[in-house]
Length: 140
Image (cartoon, rainbow, N blue to C red; front, side):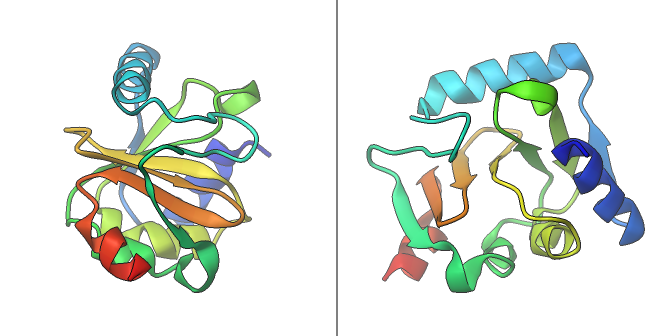
């Protein structure tokens, strides 16, 4: 099963509004956010690297999203294979933890429409860059 399909299944099961960007809009968004933040790994164990703030995935995996603004967030997965160039918009970013708790494990990136931040979540860590003061506070 593709990660995009699993994510959408979880949203539908939880009755959480979302949509998938059209291909042209997805490509434009991905190009812009990847150019802006230059993540070191967009496939395999996704990572931002460089000056990103990093915290352990445990115990934050399903709770960190409560710190996101109440706004739509843009989720995309590794840029290799079947989920390449696909972007999901979840209407309220604070619901992301609920969606993921109801889905199989996956690595992914998160941003917002303004691309004011980028998060990379892999099996070990949550990395963030941009407007992520809340993440720096969790890092201590």
